[in-house]
Length: 564
Image: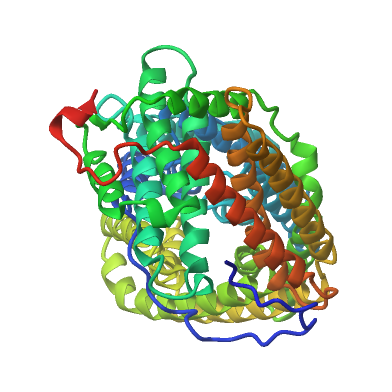
């Protein structure tokens, strides 16, 4: 029942493969939404500045406009809060950069401040799980601002431009709410149902170990759906929608625990019915529904983990970011490159959950940036025909970057790179060959130095976190097993225990996968991980059958089975 092989440990040195690094995935279901939002947020400020003859100020408005890239998967109430925090974080980083730039022109100091800002932005974005594009956009803006000549008297006006554009980006991000107020939560629920259906359909066609990736993907989709639903209001009109969707997510969760008893086609029919603004499918009213919602209420009542506790495990990643960005910037300065922040941002974009994923991102970044430099050579003659064409080219590349990046990071970078190069020309045209050379060199330097820093700064806590995750999964399984042994457990207790076990197993798989991608760590307890997963999933299946939450299994979705 696990993708891991039962061994006592793993080798501390792992081969870094190129297989699959550049493979294209299916596009995101909502790929067009961040793409359109980006254009809608960037275009009006840039066109207004163009009309006023102040296009050189576009960097400050873009700081606020690019906040529209965030939080597209969140319900609108949560999206409003997240976007507000992103705008504040963007303005805060920009303020630090502008003040620093006004106080010193020492390039070494500027690179050092940029690296520290990048580390803080990385840690906060990962701890708060703000989602893509994560810290990269924040770091790009703050690092670029460090190298723009500035005076203290100009800072309030420049921050005001960023704030005004940030407010506009917030409005753009919230614009779909009146049309599809429940779109994000319906989409998340549909994804959970489809992922559970895929695992249930594959179950029985081979060994359990062969389907472990599908099962892990299913639980990840279910957990994402729960996080989306738990962010919704608990009272009012939206609570009714939340409860209807909760029952569907419960069915997806139960299907993962007991795939042999599941009808995949019914799950897919429910997922299809959630598209658009139609009625939400009913799962049937049973006594178990009360227990299910009591389990959800228990999760709602749980206190969130404090931010400082979430930041603790991220210390190695933050240290990697600070060191790698600083060294990349210093190396660029040593080579005489005029824009060391390009190397700094390249390094900042590399750092993922472990070294193996960081290596993959480094390859994608280099390939995408170098291809983007060639694309810039083709676009530059057209963009240099006039500032209006320059702005329009940037908008087209902006759309292309967000539309393609979900296929693979390198493909999105092909558009991001020429867009960033064109933005540097808002204040005046520059020699195309010089820009191409500097960007290519900074890309290679940033990727090479940044990855070497990741190799040096190891995450020695990864093994400890795997041990803790195994212990948590074992305790969750024991709690569920005790309740299963009782003839009549308290209302909601078994459902709450089952959900707690599902969360623990999901966390265990994510922690084990993350630790397996690290170098130079101590041997991981793979045998304990495998045993914990096998026994945990058996207990989940028993709990699912005990709950008997599908008295109508095998039936198709009927028109009378749906409600608003």
